[in-house]
Image (cartoon, rainbow, N blue to C red; front, side, top):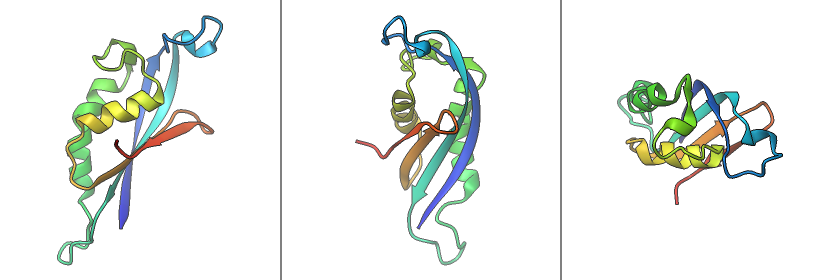
Length: 116
């Protein structure tokens, strides 16, 4: 079974390693949707794979670090592409059964990461 929880993050960033004429080289903002997916067996007693509040507890300290921030100022996110953000979040989350992190940066663009 796979379950997920989606969090909303408002943040600004610039992607410093892009060519000077690339629009994402300049500071810009996104209304990110970050989806945390967990896989596991359904607990017969609770009926859950994991309690959604456990996902909240694990992700909330990360959420506080990145929401309404300039992501480039955060250690480890100096080049905050969605790909790098997925990996950074993965490394910080302590969550049994973590399966996938998906970041949707616009309605039509995003990425997913399942660990190395």
